[in-house]
Image 1 (cartoon, rainbow, N blue to C red):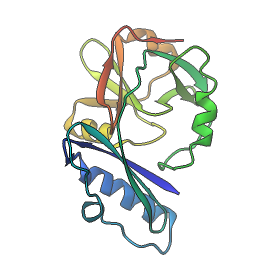
Image 2 (image 1 turned 90 degrees about the vertical axis):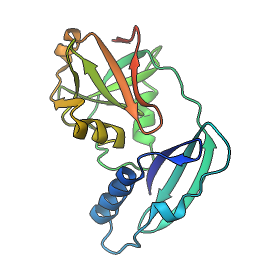
Image 3 (image 1 turned 30 degrees about the vertical axis):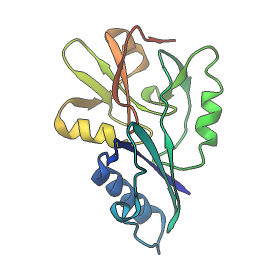
Length: 190
């Protein structure tokens, strides 16, 4: 099963076209016969203010849509973890990512390294600030919708980032559909 997580802010669905495009790509790549899913006609935001997490589970057809208040967790310390994980599509089964997350020790999350290159954390894409521009890994585990939007706008520059380059950056930011783009103050990577 696959998953889309969409932010709804004060009743407004955020960046729906990017989520629709990723869902369409995933269904097309993984299922020979599938029922197209039109997110715009299926999402009915609950009334009220604040941020809501809309969770859509699907495969060759829609399986479930749920809504819940969103509560971000603070992430300041990342632990480098080497892995050959493949996560090209956003799966609802996060067992492999959860196994990596469990190895974080005293850190808040893991920063996954594949073939010597930085990829993502267990729940977000990442970007690094070099004092002039924001750089994001050229080959992330998952091409997130926020990453995609910021790359298209020219704000994020994709390129390979090796572990030994991490000391060249001033800070890092986490990015995903729920947190947007969030620079981390006084963050550490070990």
